[in-house]
Each structure stands twice: as structure tokens, then as C-alpha cells.
Length: 420
Ligand code: AMP
Ligand code: GLY
Image (cartoon, rainbow, N blue to C red; front, side, top):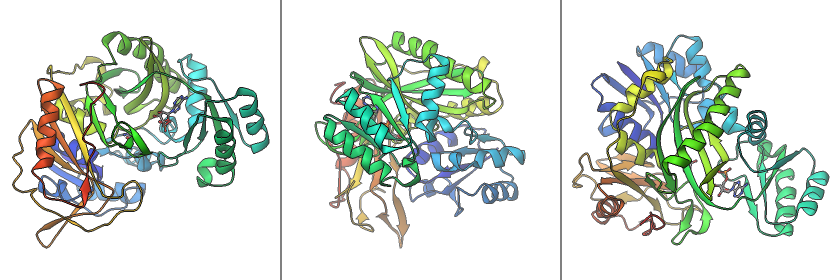
């Protein structure tokens, strides 16, 4: 089978690594890929948000399956173009990806399906939004309705911060993503991520994870795309997972099908868990990054079988084979991230790393140049390891990092602290 993966971060490196282990994979192309991906797959330059260009590329290269990594191509309708052209694609339609692209869409789906989530109100003008904040008081959560690259959420601990957030969003701080504002009840509890494969009707849980969004140790400092993750998430017990499937995931899939936009792909539910009960924080229409890296090391080659079963509507007969193991991924970022950072610094020591099925250095933002590996992004490398215990996985991941020579990069030293 010829497979095309869209994306070029650590998530896509992990997907490529896992898919390649399945004997059904003959040829693997990743667009655009990165220096690490180039070691295990062909990389291609392609505008991955242009459905026409992706479809043409897939047809020219006899691609049998396209796997979409990031949300942007999904929201741009790339999977719809591929399916119309008869190319099998793992990733929801543009209509189904509204679960990630619009916070008020997800809230409406929760209303219709009875899924537990924070109470909310939606506004298209500042004055009534401000009045709502004044009436509710703080803490309260203010969100730009649309996609804002993970930055459109303000958890306000006081009323003034909430009012300022309303003004900022309507003032254009998040562009068209801020044409409407969703104001939510502040939920307390512990957050965890739940990943489910969906074929439109059937949902199959494929793993849990917890990530660290803040840049600094002790979960302090500004938010990032994620500085590390581990799987499984201890807080997401079997009982919480069963409740999540029963009250959140299955009702959502049923409602999406009822609306004529069945959900096909991986659904990532961000949950808030308190007193043994989960409520939905948000959906994403893709794997998390870096959560995917931790999941792929646990799942390995079977992920391709699961992906094919999703695409072909055969999930009902599938099971996931779990080892009783733990994984952790630690992000190395360029000094300065998530603020401004230097690009093009050289990373030494990658070639000498001792990697195997228990330890892999996934690349997120790298490029090869003149025999050197250069850092090209904010999040640059993902040291990912597996162990019989989380502690063993942790020690192996940090050993990979300690074997590197890259003074222009940093990582958090406390990934997994809540679970360890
Ligand atoms: P989101 O982009 O929707 O994942 O929101 C980013 C982060 O904001 C989440 O991971 C939560 O930590 C926090 N958050 C979002 N909505 C709420 C809420 N209703 N109550 C408490 N925290 C929230
Ligand atoms: N790590 C969070 C995300 O992928 O959205």
C-alpha cells in the first residue's frame, strides 16, 4: 500500500514511524516532513491545505491512503476533495471538523446530545457579552469561537480580565476567529485527553494521555502547544473512560450522524475530571501533538489497521492490543519559545543516539542541511520512550535528551510529575 501523511511535526513523525512497522505499508511519503521523517520516508513539498493539489499528488503517486495530521487541511476540506476523487482518507470531513473549528458548534452538539460540559452562552457583540460577565462573576472562561491556533482561550480569575478578554476578541486580537465569543462556566478538576477512533458509527478508544501546556516547571508560565505528555493518564480510570464513552463520545457521534456529517477519523476529547466524572472541555479533530508521540510508541504498527478500519467503516470488528506499559514524550524547544526564538541552530549528537522500540527521538521542527540537522521551529524534538512503569519511561526519555548536544534548546525536567 502507498501511503501519504500530511504534516511535518512530531505527531507526523510518530505516525510515520508506527505506520512503517506495518507490513502492509509499501511506500510512505510525508508532506512536507522534516529531517527525522526523511530518515524513514520520502518527503515531498506540497501545499497540504490545497485539496486540489493534494488530490492531484495522490493520484499521480498512486496513493492508496492519505492520513491527515494537523487540523488546517481538515478545516480547509482536503479530506472531502480526496474522497470525492475516490482517494481513501483518514480525517473527518470539513463539516465534521467543525467539532474543532467552532467552539459554539461543539456546544450545540453537546446541548443536542446531552453530553456533560460547562454551561455557556454565545455572543456576537461586546455589550451583551460584557453584561453576561458582570452578571456571572469570576472565575469565568472567555473563548474566541473560531480556530485561533490554541490561543483563543482566556481563563479569567477576575472580572476585569474577563472584560478585557471580551474587548480584545471583539477588537480583532484573533481575527475572524473572534467574530463571536463563547463564555463558559469555569470548571475545576484534573484534565486528561481521551482518543477515540471513529468510523461514523462505531467508536473505539485507543488510548489516554495527559500533557503539560505551560512552558515552565511546576506548570507555570505561558501556554504552549504542549511541552510533554504521557500515556496512559492515571486519572482516566476504566470507569471514567466508560462514562466518557457512554455520555460524551457515543452521543456526539450519534448527533453528528443525525446532522448528516458522520465523524470519521480520530476524535480527541479534552476532558475535565472531578469526583470520578468527566465533562467535555473541547474536541479536536486530530491526534494531539505531543500526545500522539506517546500513543504511537504504545500502539506501533496496529495503528495502520485501525486507521484502515475507520476509513472503511469496519471498526465494529476491531480491538486494540494493549501492552501493560507506559510512555512519555518530552519536548525540546528552542530557547525563547513560546516567545521569539533563534532559528537555524545546529543540533549535535542525533546520529549517535541509541534508539530502539522503546526509545525514539521524534523530530518536530528540524531540517537537514549540508550533513547537519538544524532547528527550524519552536518545538524541535520529542524524546519519546516506553517502560514497564512511567518512571522507567521517564528515565529513558531524559537519557535521550542528555545524550544530545544542543545548548540553544531546553526542556521541562518535570514532565509527568503529577503521575509519578
Ligand atoms: P481549549 O483551547 O478549549 O483546550 O482550552 C485551553 C485550556 O483552557 C484547556 O486545556 C483548559 O485548561 C482551559 N479551559 C478551557 N475551558 C475551560 C473551562 N470551561 N473551565 C476551566 N478551564 C477551561
Ligand atoms: N497538545 C495539545 C494539542 O495538540 O492540541
